[in-house]
Length: 207
Length: 351
Image 1 (cartoon, chains in turn purple, brown):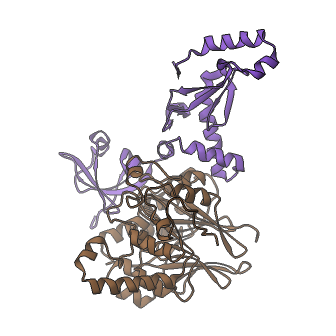
Image 2 (tube, each protein chain N blue to C red):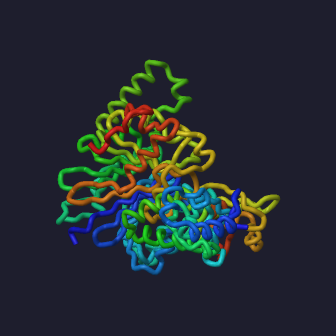
């Protein structure tokens, strides 16, 4: 169930539709029935997959979808997306597409005034840092393996010591404590290490 | 070509410094590269297949928060780099220096670029048609040799257009030294120094220890130093989660009280603890400008872009939105210093 709301959408829509067919339009204009007013629903999905799920777009709050019964169109508020209600299953795709479109334009410096304000609003509801981390390629880093047991500790080239999760640390299986290495490291939030690959041993002094 | 504005991107890299200048020739000139995991590395990696050239990478000094990303950049992009400028700010055999320097040296041995010394009088870039020049004004040779601390010998780089000094990057230099170096021609925008916590600006603990007279004298000196700088703006590149208590709220207020529009890259506890706790960004400047965000911290302004057009610096279009959002914070030090209080109209910094 994608939407959560007090009112049942489908039956209300049907009643509203039959009501508009029965009553002359000028009467509707004077006294609009309650169920013909725009209704807001909470869209329950907060994680939108991009690139087949390798990159995720995480929303910081549930989007609000406003349904206009008169046109049978719904609008994702703050996202500038309008679509027919019967196509609502594509909403997450459309949101991801809208995000990527604005992201690409911001990247190229081609945002129009309207797009800029839309991008500003969308960014308030999106975890952009997590999105960027998902997309980022591994960084080449150099460090020294201080020890493997009981926990793996690495001192990076900038002097910072970091504890590496044991699952990630399995990449060091061929190294000994004290070895200096270079590796491609996928960094996560707060520079946590997500994965380590393409390890090379660096020549130490005197070797 | 002379119509193309110079773009100056002050990157939010968390606790650290990084500025990318897009020259009219479309080449990049990078002043400090930020710490390990710098978003600049991601940004360059994404543009791996674009014909981007890096005219120079200039390191004001070799601290991890300014130069930590250098090995990552050199490994991936050494063929794009045309020159690296750095200085000797600690013992040659110091492990931190060796690790940074070794990666730079490998590229030079490979014939990719030359390493040159950041020293007073060196010109990094010059455009005669625009009368613009980016050059080093500190340290001199003897200042570099005599320094006892890496921050003491931090390079000061300035961008000048005609007779005006527009931007100054004093790295992590002490406030009084930075002021003495820059006072003859104050910059329009000051980057830092030292992430808003100049090492000569007393911390709370120091203030408690010092006698009242000493403290008063010190504060008079610092106030005079800020007055001499007369900057219209200050960009404080600071990380939310830094363990040095940067920026000093007193320094921010002092800058603001002198009429400077103070902008911090990230939000810190001194402005609003709750927002930091919930990681609620004030404005995601990096995303808005299409740049990569920092992996750590809560963005206040995020990255900021300046355009140099006709000898004048123009900030990007998110400047107003930012100040409006900052006014919603519980204790915005930048606005409090400017005498603003809730319910009053926002100060007109543009004037």
